[in-house]
Structures are given as structure tokens and as C-alpha cells.
Length: 438
Image (cartoon, rainbow, N blue to C red; front, top):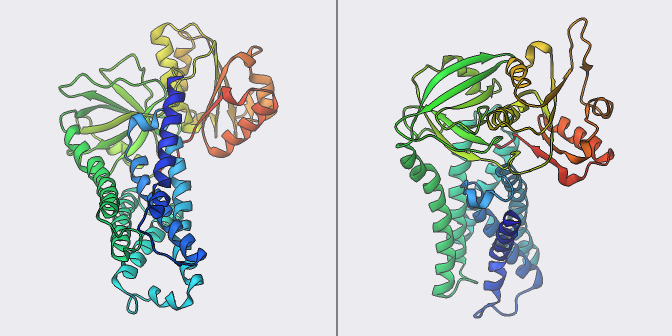
């Protein structure tokens, strides 16, 4: 119930802040005799600007803000609402020009005024940010470069937009209105400074040391870290952390990985890392003794959050990693609740951590069904995808009592969720973890 109350509070606060520009527009003194389309365009510009400013809060990793929803949900919302906000901002000049076509000249940086030039700069920065995010994978832009450009363009957009608002002056024509808008921009830029400067300063006193880099099956690695002169880290099974492997926490190379170790241990943490990108493909070259830094824990995908008399874990590929942490934690706690694991992967040789799962079978009430796309000769288990038929054969008889946790490729999770809903599993009993955080 506390999470529900907290979630409602942040939603209401977010909505109230978004409506602040409209409220300020209505407070005298305001321009008189202006056309409807002109006023609508200005209102959309203010609302879009406020939404963009709030994105700095969403990406700042405030655990109190993200806890009710999970940071994966918050970042998914960030991606979607940013597009909506930019659309509103693009409508801002379009409607103003519709109201008075003569204002088309303001789109010419050489023929407009300084207010219009800063507005144009802000719009171009936002459009570039959206395009880079949508096309990053297609053009294989390295995550670190994209991230630096994403933040830099965001700061340019918000500062240029605030300058545009101040120079235009129509609805910020009093000192207190100017102070509100300038203060908002300063706070949002300050959040970037906090995330990229103050947090690393604090991380300097909480370094970690690489104690093992172990190759697993399926192009997967286990990275083990031990705390250096501090008590380690407490996390919930299923959570993740952003990992930096560098001599300084100020590096821009930082990636999110799920814990695979037990949450009952704070003296060592282990991450499961699949070779999928520039950083993860270099795991074989990470040296024992190297310095690392962590930002975490994050995430709401945890059995501790969703209590039930039993669980069904459904994993695809590297989606097994949070479940490995949950199972190890159950083993260390002596948790007697039953777990059914359905684990899908490309081939038997690609099934990471299967040896550890065999050991966990002896410590946890665990039943495992492997589903292979390309099974070996003589394979007697499930083949192909996790279909409704596979679920029919694999799910326990008391499945209606259990909580279902899904983690894997989005198409698999969508298909499995639909199949579970068709079987009558309540939607509230189905929880998904999506790894697309960037």
C-alpha cells in the first residue's frame, strides 16, 4: 500500500508541474486580443518545454521516484513522453505561423530575432536528440557517444528554450514569472551536474575490485566484484546496477547489468553479462584486480516485491540473470516455496548457468523446463518457442496461485504474457522486466 500511495503522489505531482505553465499564462498581466491558434501554440510550447525539463528528473535515478514503478518503466515512459513533448514543441511555431503567416520569417536564423534564434536552436537540439535515439542501433552509434551527445543536446535544448522564453517575454513579463522559469532551467541542469559530477565524487569512496571474470556458456560472462574498504552493497534479488570498470568514476562508459549473486551476501556481488555490445564484448580483457564502481541497486523486478505462495519464472536468453539471483537468495534463506522455471534459449550449448541451476535444484524446490530453438540430436525436451502449448505442458497445477515473472526478448515476453492472460492468469500476477534501458 505504501508503494501505491507513493506512486499516486509522484503522478499527481508530475501532472501538477506539467500544468504550471498554463496556470502562469492565466495570471495577469497577460497580452490581450490574441487569436486562439496563437494562444494554443504558445500553450503547447510551454507544456512541451515543461515536459522536456521533467525528463531530467526521470533520468536522474532518484530511487524514491522510481521505486513505485521500477526504473525500467520510468525510462520507457521517458522515451515515449519525450517524443510527445517534442511534437508539442514543433506544433508551437506551426500554430503561431498559422495564426500569422508573416511570422514564417522567424524560422530564418538570419531574418528573425534573438528570441526566435534561440527557439530554433532548442528545437533543432531536441529533434537531433530524438533522431539519435531512434536511429542509434541502426547506425551502430556507440552507447557512450550517444549518451554524451544525448545529455549535451538536452542541456543545450533546455538552456536555449529558457533563453527564448525570457527574450520573447510575452508571458514572463514580471520578475517573479522570470524567476520561476529561470529557476526551473537551473534545477534541471543542476540534476545533470548531480548525476554526472556529484554522484561520481561520492562513488570514489566506494570502489570495488574485480575478483573473477568467468566465461559461461552462450557468450556470457560472470563478473565478480568485492568491496574496497567499505561494507558492500545490499540489494533485492532481481535488481541491477550500472557498472563502471575504470580507475575513475568519472568515465562515461557505464552499463546496466543484473545481479546474479545472492542478495544475502554483501561481501561480493556477481553480474551476468552477455556479449551484445562494445563493452560486453570486451569482458575477456577485464583483468582481475581492476577497479570498478557501481550505481545501484535499481529496479523493481524482484520476488521480494511480489510475494506469493510460489513462482513461475520464464526466461529467454540472458533474461535468466535476475532469476539466478532470486534462486540463490531463496537457497540461502532456506525458502521452501516452489518455483517452476521455463528457460528458453537458442541451443543447449547456449544455455548459460545450467550447471548452477542443477546445483540449485538440490537446495530449492525447483522444476526446470528448457525450451530450445535448435535442439541437439536426441533432445527429448521442449523445442521451438515458449508457446501456449509449451506452457500447458510445463505450468504447475497450482499455477493460478503463483506469481509469474518474465524476462527476455520483448517478442517472447509479449507472446507469453498474451498466452498467460488467455489461460486466465490475472494481469496483476504477471510482472515483466525489459532490459531496454537505453
